[in-house]
Amino acid sequence: MFGANKMITSEPIYSLPKTPPLENGDQLSRQEFERRYQNLSEVKKAELIEGIVYMSSPVRVQSHGEPHSDILTWLGVYKAATIGVMSADNTTVRLDADNEVQPDALLRIKIAGQSTISDDDYIEGAPELIVEIAASTASYDLHNKWRVYRRNQVQEYLVWRVYERQLDWFRLNAGEYIKLEPDSRGIICSQVFPGLWLDVNALLAGNLGQVLTVLQQGLASQEHQDFLKILSRKTDN
Figure 1 (cartoon, rainbow, N blue to C red):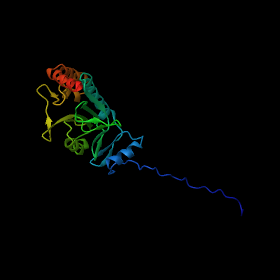
Figure 2: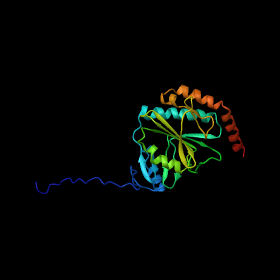
Figure 3: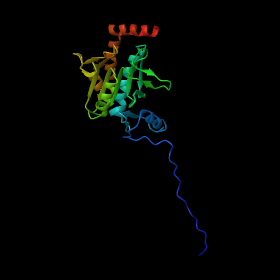
Figure 4: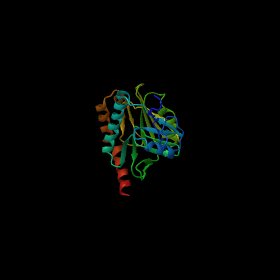
């Protein structure tokens, strides 16, 4: 019927967010990366590697969650016996103007070490030791990130290649990463954190009890006792 009122509906009005979203492959400065990251509460892990954004996929249990937990336990026991060092899980590290990472685990010397804690509670500078849980040699942990850690002088870098059942332990030597090999007992001993011993085969086999048994041997060693004295003198000063 002519003249009848018709209901006119309008399309919803979408308000653009003030801060653009963070997306894989974005090329950003570290300051802009932080600004976008801090506005996305749903994003749990994103990294800036050589100015490019990398965002993690959902985390699987056996290929990441459990290995990650085992590494944290190993480092946590070492920390408990070594006053003056700090271990951390998935913590933001500001390395330089183009690189801000969240390593799976790290160990740092708290006083007179390479890194500091910023006023806004982030790590600035390179921790002495970083561990990453990677799927395979194809992971960026063994390529772009490896080069970034080397350039920023992360002294020891461990990569657990879960699918390949391998662990790489790199030691910085004259600006280059040298791969450390297990001794005749199958153990690798940290050159930066005396007493941090790792039974590699036990770790790869999921035998955390044996991993901790060997670590306790390292903690009882003379080299660890000497390291405690050095750390104590730093604390006293």
